[in-house]
Image (cartoon, rainbow, N blue to C red; front, side, top):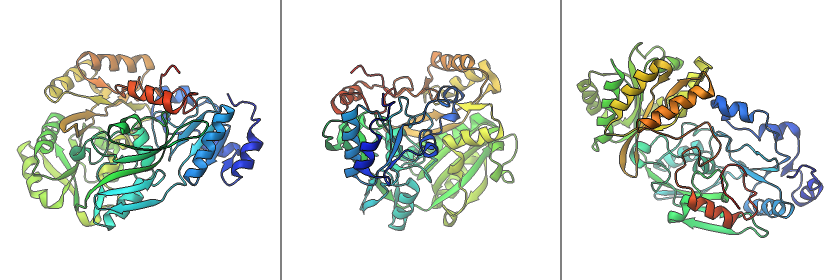
Length: 445
């Protein structure tokens, strides 16, 4: 589709050179994301042809114009935020137009308990502005400095803050403005359960131009590195801290040794051969956490006081998928998985994986809440040997009750998105020609 570019002149007349770009370097750059975290996706996507053109839109009028034009010429449209996704979300598998929304970056309104935002606002900008107003974001990814709010909602799931507020489906999106892919694109204002068809959808069911998220009261966060003789002790500490509702927290991230050795900026404060837990807690709770750590034979090895929050590198810069990035900087053969362990049996599941694979799999967990329940979520580092071996590890984990959300595929169903039937039905309604980010969701039109 869209190979002959017979439409180039027409779209330039419609939008102008300030919006519509055909420069080969820009097209190549904006047709990629961070899929290279996966050696499987890197092999499959690195030679994919760039988009035929890039629309650098500035407002909803231009979004609607691009969609209407593309519909009339049957041109695929792949939406893009900052391109920090890891699954090839922003890669245009069938060419066409990349719809770059990063210039739609206005904070429309910050009210009591909420922020209404254009989709291209960076999460770091929202956090800074909200904290100046006595509030803060509830959840955000480790890529928050670069990531956009629309990209996070459309391509992410959870992050820092999820230990208290859960994932995106747990009330962390209040409202969204969505444009459909039709002859005359509709502007939909979506709330409630209908939002689920647009969360973590890769822009397959509609184009999100505006989003409203809840805010929490600002907290003065202390950042800690807590160390333990064994990884199991670090996990038990993490579970106890997660369950203690009297301690206000934003992050609990245990790491098996040698993962902490990859965090070179903290090399002077991390003791070798010990597990480490990256923690963010309300500063007033520091004595309580110190006592809790000692009860599991641990100690607080490093503290970053609340007055230095966001003024220097922080512990969250080494958590969630930034853990993988630091690992890959140290050893290029490392990749990762995304896994859900069972609260009732995670220690036994960990032991079984270690018995089967040893240090071929290194544990990194994120304690979070999912629909209110405490959940040990794991992003283990894996020394990559082959695709076949990677899927041996995946299949073994699944055989012992560990749910794998496969980060080595761009297809939503295969990546563990869960039930997508509602999204498929929504796509048929909103995108009748199947032009929005084709190939990312299995949906017979």
